[in-house]
Image (cartoon, rainbow, N blue to C red; front, side, top):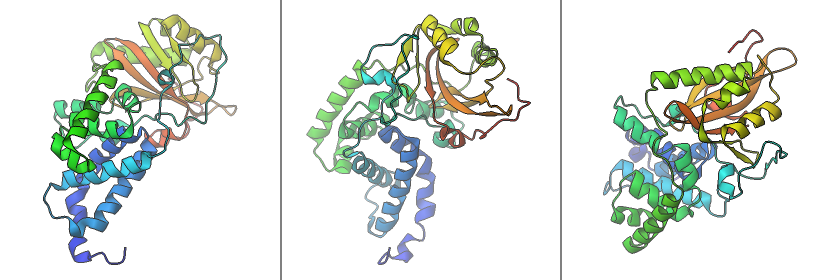
Length: 331
């Protein structure tokens, strides 16, 4: 960092810090990983601090930081495999009788805590807008786009930049931006991404649904769980490659493959990607409970339409969830 003029960088933190959360959400949309997004935000601020002396204020600080973040993400994505969910691998749904296939080599899509992406606002419309842009189905669909198309779509359709601004940020032409946007929009449309999965306040019926959900897992009541899904419900659980559809198939999977038994699976509620989520714990030999899976639910009315289940204990501290629960824990 030698050669940096500290007289011009002293005010950089005060000028830039307000954008950290939205830059994190931007990097998450691009990368599909909470861990990578954290690294890329740090990289963005390091690059920005180093070049702040040359910042001529021809654009806003926010636009300048987004330009740096986008290009940092594109560099990081060069040569990397995309981050899918099991439903994005192209295979048909599986049955509960088929053996589980664990794919640890796949860089799976990760969920993100709402606490890391919510900006300091009390405007429900602004909160919904922020959460819509990181909902799990949307981010999963983004990962199917080539990195440049992904960047163009996010800058144009999420951030509402003009084509000329995007062209400048990506050092390309307006014609190239418009062409990439057209292709990206067509692919996103083919993914049939739902726009109804994000809520700010749960209805009384949805609150009751989630209470029944946690109680059903605590009691391991498979029949009750069957009644909580929509008719076309989907269940997927990286790092396992299979995905499951219809309440009967999902219930059979939970009933036969889940190692937890009655009074062995307490849950703690949280929020991920603008959707209700739960950290589910599993009873150990000493009677305490350890992290087992993180569930992210997409609701449709007062039913569960989609459940993404992440078997990654490293996500629990990111969501502020405890690393264990005492033996006297109940649902």
